[in-house]
Image (cartoon, rainbow, N blue to C red; front, side):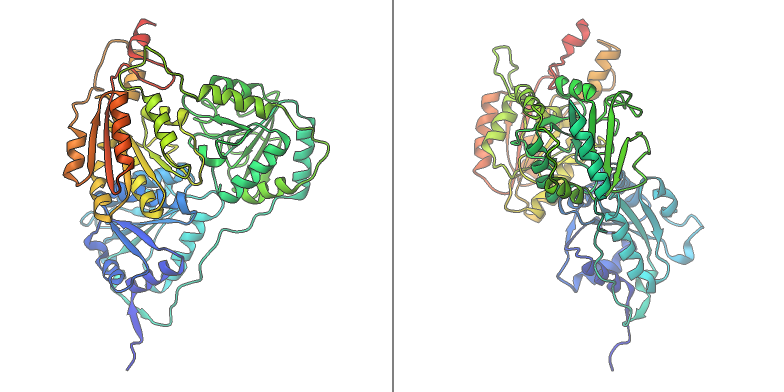
Length: 556
């Protein structure tokens, strides 16, 4: 006699398959053992076992950024879910689709502060698009489809679903089937608004575009590049959105954020029209909401974003277009308007960026010159290389001297979360096994999730990790020297031998204390496959790619 029921956990896995999930990241917990068992019987979803829930969450967040579909992570209740909370925060601020499943206490235990119990809908509500608990197994298809729809719709972001342990073992009718795969809703650009935008551009003398962010994809990149190059429009990328347009584009003006080209900041300040596409115009991109300012007197702001709640939220806009950024870009690329006389500003801005972003060797360079090292890495790796980094001043050298030519090519948390680079690099190496992937981390940054080298080794990831070691929390030290010069407190680090640590994980590794030693290590790393790590030791004196030094701040 045929079975008339199936286990709820099996239905959940079927729903994930229906939504196109092919990989999930997890630190196993007894609260969702039934899901792990259901995954055992099906081969369509790869299970990547991680070493800490924050690492698993970052991998899911990065996977969502790479694919445009929600990255998926499973963690257990209490400590596991709170560890993963940092990834939910990153996915929210970075506008990246992600679904976090949390094994929860049994329904009969709820409300008693049972073992590791947390009210997850309440806990995650402020940092997610939607947080809920599935108590009725028959509604699993509804909840999963809604989770994926919410995660990719409008401004993409994270969703959290709690799964009571006993619910996962409940029987459910075999007639309960997954809902079909959900897709991002089509949002075409309004023709009248497009016509108004072109008229504004025709009247502008010094326009600039700021692009990248919610829903940005390859189609948006190619179409907007076509449009901008046709009219000579300078294109700056929002903070850590540097792959939004190829670095080789003749109108690429550089990236905004921390440590930008001063000439680019001045160009935005002097622009009479700012076209923001996909960007939220957050604090980092706008120099603390000053360039442009929320009311931007003397400037016209056209804001294009797929989420109506973002338009007008912080910035007053003279023209708002609520539409998918790729649909907007395609419409702009296809639009014919002879009234727009091509601008010279695109080429001028590109020349200014190239001058600023090109390393100039000098005799007073430090023993290990990070600008020179980034340049030789860039010249030695393929254009389609994916670069992942966490947070810290070390990243500034890559933001300035790297060329993000491929797409997707940059994984970097706009919210400044440390510990992101290595897990994101693991996710990228698994998603693109034939593309070069480099994870860059500072010493403080690396030790927040360096344990995920074990995940990379176990999964057979082809990943190069570069650890930049100045024996300090360098970013905080910079602020400390500026505010309290010479009074070093709480920012000095005593570090392990990172090369030896990597070797313990089975990685090839090397240590470099000079630019020449780094060049030799990098040359050998390029010839190898699998997990590799270069431990680059620098002096804390070189604090930032802008040229800031400890002695300079103290002398000031």
